[in-house]
Length: 155
Image (cartoon, rainbow, N blue to C red; front, side):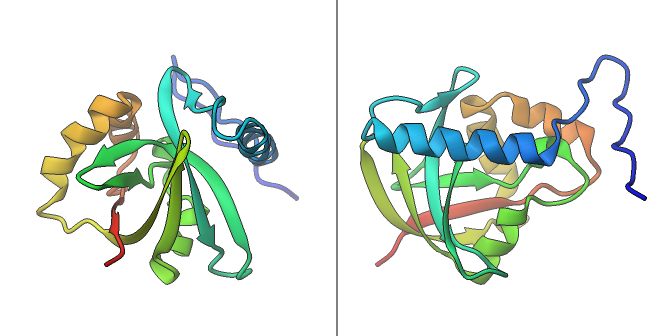
């Protein structure tokens, strides 16, 4: 017996099935690579980046398209999962293996991810919201404290 997906609140869309999101992400990564980073650099009008990481369980190297939030000489990665009650799977990957490569358009950076401290987050949310306004809605949608990863150059 499979669990029914949660019923959306009035005025909200139902979440997309996991397999559709996964297929869309893989296609987006493929097309961006095919065009050598010239195209497929946005989603819904907001910039995205491509994060290459090691899987926490599988140990495989994978690349995911995530919202691009530039910060200092690196990026901020928000583990929002659109305001779902749980963290995205990639959250565990960065906790276990924090060394990542982030590609935005045609440039690439080797970065190390760390979870933002609770005291840092109030200063980081306005930056995140500026680059992807839906983050504010996601925070209202969940009781979960949405993690932010501060990804900085490896020295």
